[in-house]
Image (cartoon, rainbow, N blue to C red; front, side, top):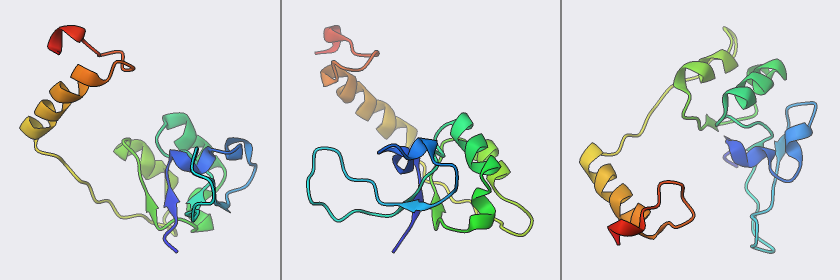
Length: 118
């Protein structure tokens, strides 16, 4: 199965694990789901990337993909013997701005919510 390294790997208490491992966290609020495999690191924060590096994430070679907004910091996860490859996905900036406009009109839980936009 396809093993991911994202923030989902540290849910269910796995943020305190001492060793890198594949975990199968449950989807919150969805009982009896087919649990997907994740590595127990958080690659979406700089502290999580440092923790993964210190735990020997790259040499464990458990993940098929690492998802992170921190491109340069993620480079520190890998070594000369356990190298990574980079690919990125970008959304058109105008499409993204329009989507954000409509989102913040209804997302009253967001700090950027503006009732004037309704």
